[in-house]
Image 1 (cartoon, rainbow, N blue to C red):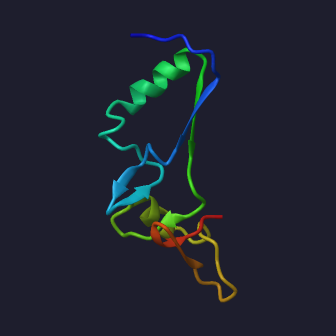
Image 2: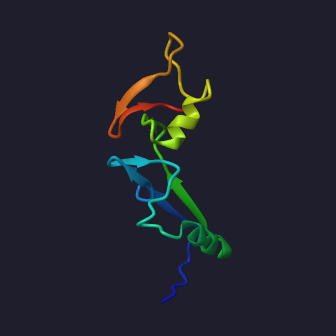
Image 3: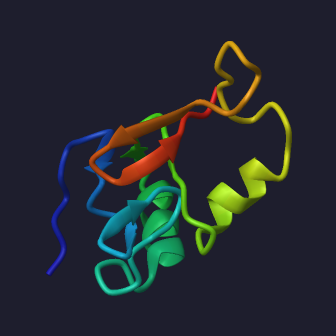
Length: 100
């Protein structure tokens, strides 16, 4: 069944992310909820619509999370405290580093 909805964009808040250790891993797609995310985005784009995904401004500190590992490998990607070390904080995903 196809619907011709009059809208310009879809917004997803956290539901699209892949859960690693029960934590949302931003910049990922949950393969169970969105098994064909590339095709889905192409179909949305073909109709002139946009997809906006909302993330929080922090990165879960987890050595098995590629986004954290990549950012941690580059000095200057994370916010620094007054001592020049990466700022560590706590939020619902656990220990985190804030990106600039």
